[in-house]
Amino acid sequence: MLLLAGCGTPDTGPPARPAMWLVADDDTHIYILGTMHALPRGTDWDDGKVAAAIGSADELVMELSPAQLAAAGTEFQKLAPRDVPLAIEARLRGKALAGYRALEDSGSAFGGDKLDDWAVMVLMGQRVAQDAQLSSADGVETGLTEAFEAAGKPIAGLETAREQLMLFETLDAPTQRALLTRAAEGADDAVAEVAALTAAWRRGDVAALEVMINEDIDAVPAARRAIITDRNRRWTIWVEKRLARPGTVLLAVGAGHLVGADGVPAMLAADGVKVTRVQ
Image (tube, rainbow, N blue to C red; front, side, top):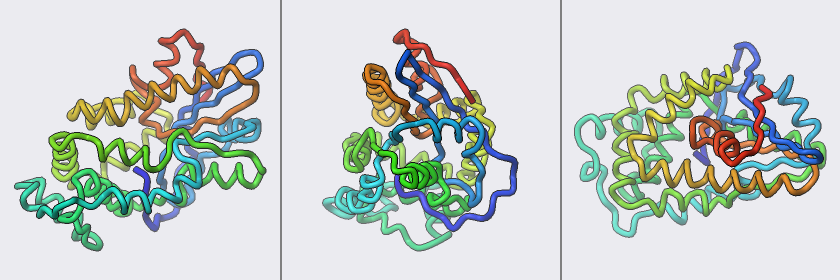
């Protein structure tokens, strides 16, 4: 989720129209934009309503500030190693092991024997992004950071890199193993699924995004609570508190946090806050 990388190929499709919402009162406007952390090179997503939000916002708030994103690799290296190595063959069997090996064979070895289950899954996610020809350099967060830095506008984060990685590190062992197994079993279809997810994001199709994300994360309820629901509640509270101060903010977080009954817009609405979809 943090370290997606890939060389990317040029995007030649129509401009993307990612979903965006607005929460506002008399003196505060908070735009909430659903992002993709990695995209095909040249993806056009920042015109129209998004361009207007970028231009009018006094500050940008993302999951991680630029400094924390830069620190993510170091934090990963600190947290990822196992206390005692455990062979992947002792963790995965059958289709899952075959999927892991096939994904590993598409690039350099993961070194998974020495890593926690969650860390292996993160490395697999990076490889899928690379195989799908997505690049974090062309992701929404990178583009927003460049725009706000060029304009001399402040950029903040909702979490630290360590806090974000600890969401996985502190999952119990069965939950970590379930996530790893599910990712490995689905490795054959992962590139196609990432392409479908990206296409839905481009269309601003929140219903399709909800189906795809829920189908994946609902299989491991403990992970959903830690990675999606609990964070969305914290971010909802942040939006509600931010409304007490004047100004215009662009809040940009992963699109998966903005869909469904436990997405941030739905949580805000359930708390009586007016939320308007503006794109």
